[in-house]
Length: 187
Image (cartoon, rainbow, N blue to C red):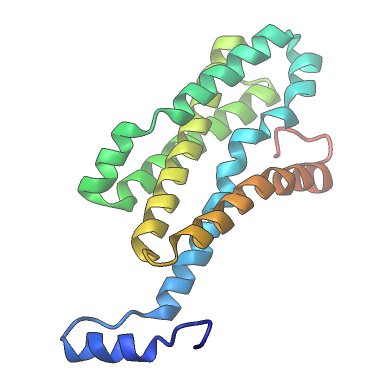
């Protein structure tokens, strides 16, 4: 008995039944795209990259930083309505919302670090709420897409994606330190 099942018989049965044959290359491309999205989900954990800058530039206390982080996390985990939108319209409206909220949050945060927007707790809370909404939504998008694309091998695929989510914070920290140095607004 072979350890790995042969998929040839399954493909032949699907073809004989008139069902579409699974395109493995398309599934692989989708998997790679979802794995990159899982790295982007680590934006939630990038808050620690900015804490020293918050203290040095804006004189924010630890309580202020906790408020900013908590507001961002509340918006990150408030994804149930977006799950209904995914079921109704698919992943593309959520990806569009991700681009808008993530882009706006990042742009406004960069403008605050450059001094164009006042650096207050309220402003930073709004900016982090936008960025974490993006991270929460992209998490919903790629996990549900993987669940629909890999229904038989769901466990290992989701485990790999979540491992990359954990490693993504290290990737973001390396990018910040090595490419941008002290230019936090460029990051």
